[in-house]
Image (cartoon, rainbow, N blue to C red):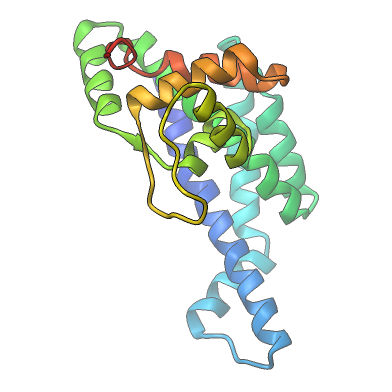
Length: 212
C-alpha cells in the first residue's frame, strides 16, 4: 500500500511542471509586449498550458491527495485552496497559495515517513540529512509562511548572525534555523506562524538545537 508521504512526494513534481508552464506563459506575455518571438520550447509548454494539461494534472491528482490527508487527520484546506485557484484559472493566486501549501505538505511528508517507518535508522537518516542542511532566508520564510523580513527580525531576537542588506547566498545552519523557529514560536503575533515554526522545528534534529 502506498504511504501518504510517498503520495505527497510524487505530487510535488506535478505542481513544479505546472509552475514551470506558468513561468513560460509569463515569459511569452512579456516577449509579446516587446514584439519578440517565442522559442519552439516556449511554444510547446504554452500549448500544454493553454490546453489546460498541466493544470488539469495538478487538479486531478490533488483531488485524490486531499482525502488521504483528511483520512490521516491532516488539514487539507491549504491544498484545496490552491487547487481551487488552479481550477478557476487564477495563476497569481495559485502561486501565492502554493507558497503556503508546499512547506505544509513537505512537513506532513517528513512526519508521516518517520511515523510509517518508525525505527531508529529512519530517524538517524533524517537527522543526518537535516543536520547537514542549511537554509536561505527566503527558504526558511517559506517553511514558516512568513516574509524574509520577519525571519530577519526574529533572527536578531534569537541572536543569530544576519546578512547585510543586499547580500546573496547567505544561509542559516540547522542550529540557527531552530533558534529562529523558537523565537517565532514564542513571539510572533501570527498564530499560523507560531504553529508553522513549532511544526517545522519538530522536523529538525534536536541535537542541532542543543549545541552550544
